Image (tube, rainbow, N blue to C red; front, side, top):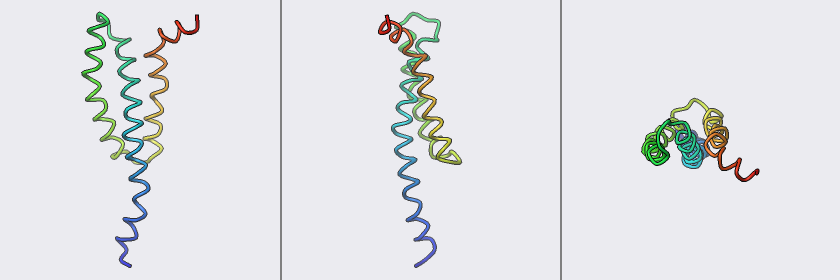
Length: 100
């Protein structure tokens, strides 16, 4: 069996993992980033949400491209994990209302 055929078979799990992380992790990161940015922008709430939503397309595309360009899968996983602190920042007012 040629060496290239063996290498391509072993590459498929890594490609599938990067694809799942890019799609789902990128979505989670973009969703949390958009919510956090809408909280941080010093604009009226409607304008802040509109601006953050427009920038979300660029953020998602950047995450998708970066997920395949990153040196290791761990970096992509850590990048997707950054959605957690961003979600806490973005949804802090709603969390406070639930806790009261």
